[in-house]
Image (cartoon, rainbow, N blue to C red):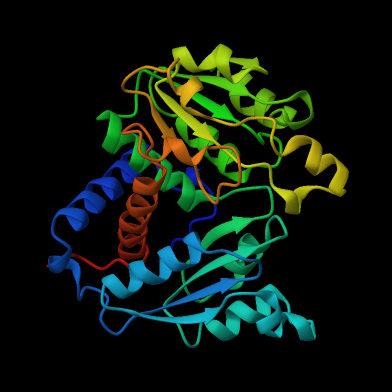
Length: 306
């Protein structure tokens, strides 16, 4: 039995195979509409989510399975003091696979160690968000043809952004990937990612403050929101939240084939005028996420297509 806690839990070859399966599902959804008949996924979300939770639930329904779970800690026995470990032991008697989102780093890992069913980390604090990473990789491959020889710009909250941390960790395994880290001083990439991941693996990167300076060189621009829930005080959040706004003027500086990604939700960091730009890929990214989660569920449950 396998779990997904980190993007590194699967090899590059395994991820490529999963993405190949996602393409097949995308191209012929009817063929996979009953592969999970009789199976259930439990979505255990201890903090709010729209896209990730609904994406998992839709993925399982598309495969013919069913969904149980809760959408906030307030509607679970966590309010009575039940541990994550006890919750997964109980849920494992009802479901065949579980996706857990939790505000505490490492909570899904704790659950996986005692779980009788496969566990997927659907986001744990500021730590990891591996299925968003699979979504990002699948989106990049689908739009650019492959994941190699690319300059990736990561913009916004690089300090608390778990999607950024997971994506960097995954992308360094691909050939000739370069990073441009775009953030204010206060939201720079944590030193443990910079030193232990980028420096240790001799990955080319540079850090800049101005988006305008970086955008002409990019093949992919990954925008992130400044996350209010990660700040300790309102004043710091208000000061940082509109530091970067991608608008049509800035997009004029970009390559014709540079794509804009965003894990969503966005607040003000991408102007709505960008939505109609063919390079704006963040809503397509959501759809790609559903297909790759279908492929992941099939992989962890070891079910085959028809």
